[in-house]
Length: 308
Ligand SMILES: NC(=O)c1ccc[n+]([C@@H]2O[C@H](COP(=O)([O-])OP(=O)(O)OC[C@H]3O[C@@H](n4cnc5c(N)ncnc54)[C@H](OP(=O)(O)O)[C@@H]3O)[C@@H](O)[C@H]2O)c1
Image 1 (cartoon, rainbow, N blue to C red):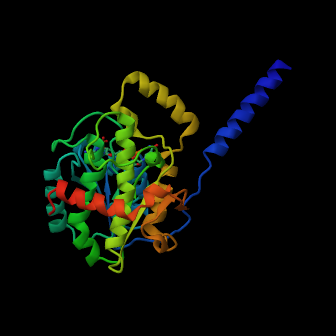
Image 2: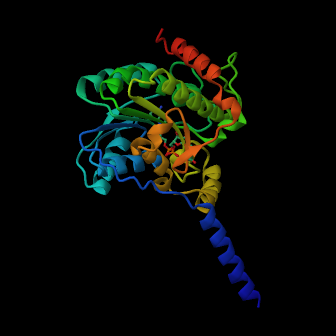
Image 3: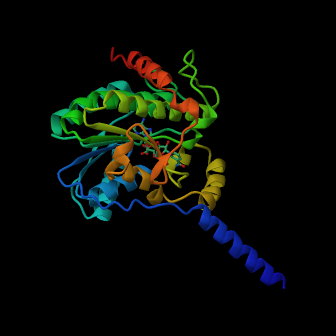
């Protein structure tokens, strides 16, 4: 009897886990032949799986990475999985605004097109600073991508209709932005939440200023994903997270589905400025839909990265 109860409880637990991990797949099979897709941090996790899908659809794929060894290895893997040779890497360190400017200069010189920009790279909550003395999360996750997108915007407009997909996280809801202290660097998890909230405001304001210019913008929460982000923490935390991730988090292939959906689907294109979860538009908390805050953050970011 005891054995039977154990088997039933294990089966129940297994099915609950499977149900929790159930996610929608992007079913849009649109081809991207002749299009160029740029993915920041495409050497691991969600970015790498997104790159595989983009390459399979015929796009020219460029992953922008800070570590060239990891990037080369990822390019080989993406080529192998997608059966495409049209995959390349370029050097980009989002923690250094000079590197972002250098990258954009090279990109515009080398590449004729940019049809889809995927702002995927991110640092999890760590108390560190970028080379320009911004908190790591705010600097990499928001400011680096802010400058990158702005410098590549002329090329995106030339290739219209084009798209910008920015990865955020549902944990945006645990914090608000403090304009007196945008560079907040106190509690690691909260620095991450604020940077992901900034990603949402950025995506909305980008949609507003590019309205009618053929560029659309989407913010995506990929779900909780088994990926490489734990490498920034201690061995003990990593071991604990491996167990939790195995039980409750989805694979990075599944995590990539909503990103792919926003990059290709005609349905998504109707919701520029929207927030997407599980391959459909989702509702944000009211404070995260404040157009005034989004505009204020845009203007503050322009000053911080010295665009104005
Ligand atoms: N995993 C989740 O549960 C989860 C949940 C919600 C949202 N997200 C979001 O999904 C996106 C993808 O995350 P992931 O889970 O796939 O994480 P990941 O495997 O850790 O990938 C992050 C990528 O960002 C790159 N990166 C970090 N700092 C960089 C810098 N300064 N310059 C250039 N690239 C840099 C990393 O490069 P290195 O390999 O060189 O470090 C890596 O390729 C992120 O925006 C994340 O916030 C993830």
